Length: 147
Image (tube, rainbow, N blue to C red; front, side, top):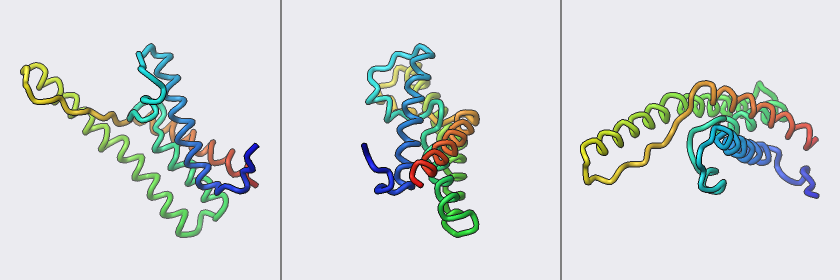
């Protein structure tokens, strides 16, 4: 068994957040009936429920708050980072993903010889909110498991 006290709780929180959220995404997609080629490929896919970026950022934010306190600069930087991640997932990546899908449709409809661009998915507000809740939960578990 791995002694969790020998590994940084910050790294554990980030890694657990990322892996757990991607595992949940995979099973949610399976329940929705999506045809997934392999779990390995799916772990690198963007979009879906919940947001892995948000989960990892909030797991880290929670561990920093519990270990280092919420009044220091590190917590402030981590909070800013988590908020930027959320904004990016909902506004920037989602918008560019929708534009990518529209461009793909246009190129297909025009029977263009231009290779179809990849259309990365962003997240809905619910996917980001659930990622944040999952991240806080994982952060709490990591904090108490490493004390």
